[in-house]
Length: 185
Image (cartoon, helix red, strand yellow):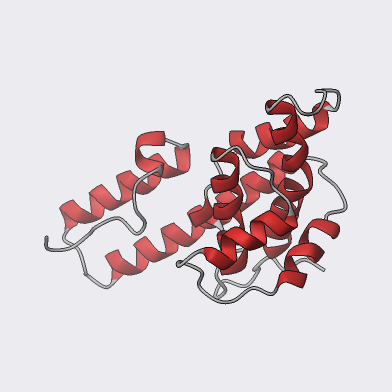
């Protein structure tokens, strides 16, 4: 049963996609890091494909709706940038040590996340789905800001331009803070 929001009053999200992507990354990136460090032969191209498809989708931690997956994805990125293996244990340790953890995530949850990933088939599609849902949430938030008159017409136009650039994947814009700064400065 899908957990995707379908009613108009629900926030767009796809928790199953978030779980699948994070689980697939924890399952595959330990091998990928070992290959990159020369500790394992580069014989299974599926590991490279998983990372490439997720990266091509332009997925960022802020795109995740569920705070647990947002925290896990940020930890996975940190571990990859540090050249460390990505396993349920290492991701748990990074999250537990983080001062930005939005709430406690039990260690057993991390293990079940990696173990419950049943496929990496079309992982790029799932990652793009998360980005799409995040863009919809951003548009809804911007619409509320504009509809309630919290910004003037010039600021509203700038906000819409920023969101359009984010939706197109403009790297200079997508790396900026969310929500964009609006209102009197």
